[in-house]
Each structure stands twice: as structure tokens, then as C-alpha cells.
Length: 169
Image 1 (cartoon, one colour):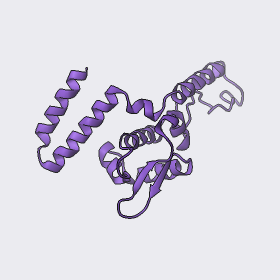
Image 2 (image 1 turned 135 degrees about the vertical axis):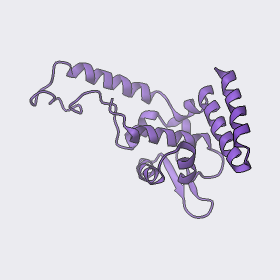
Image 3 (image 1 turned 60 degrees about the vertical axis):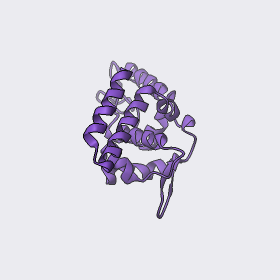
């Protein structure tokens, strides 16, 4: 599957946005810091996500991004597709010209796998991910680290967050 950094980062950023739904708009700077993704890279991704109607932005003080649709109606496949990615296991990009301009022996096998991957990602929504205990635990740990950085208690907060995550395993 040709799922590059672009697709992974788009899903990560959208999940971060979904986790903060109902609060103030989220700035790309906040997502960049939270997820350790380049701000300029996020700007490129969010231009595509906005064009696809998945996010909406608010300019000015207090501005940022929000989901443009309910998180339960945004599939992971939709996010990946919005940033020009696709689940493709073929070496020909699905063009059936793998071997001297013709289909290779395994073309149909890789096409079927690509379809299964798409079906899998299309069946998972941001809302489902937001409710997963392991996602909640990581989000709480990230928030605890941010809070620790703000308060100067980072070491204590990280140890406490690690203890909480350890009880979930």
C-alpha cells in the first residue's frame, strides 16, 4: 500500500482535531506541536482537507480549524483520499501496465488487496477512533505533557501519565 507520510499525517491531524471537537477552534500550530508535524506540511494538508469539505477554518484571533462534518461521518479512507493518497498495492498504480505495458501475473491479486484495504479504512470513522480506549489514553498523556510543560511539572506529569497508560495495558 502506498500510504505515505502525507496520508498518515492527515489522519493523525484529523484525529487530533476530532479529539478537541466541541472546544475552541484548533490552530495548526497546536496540532504541529501536539503531533510533532511540520507546520508548513500541515498547511498543505489542510488546504486539501478544506477543499474536500472535511474541515472549515476561522480566521483571526481565536481562529483555527474545526471538523466540517460530524466525526462519525468522516471515514479514514475519505481523509486519505482528500490528500491525494490511495490504497494501492500494485506496482503500476492500478493501470494494468506492470510488465512491458501489460498486466503482470499478480496484478489482480494486488488489486483485490487494495480494494480490501480501502473497504477496511472506509469502514472506520474518526468518531470510532476517538472512542477507542488506547486513543483516549494517548490523548490524555499528550494533554498531561502539554500541561506539564505549561506548569513546569513535566517530569511528574509524565510519570503519572505513564502509570495511567500502564493500567490500561
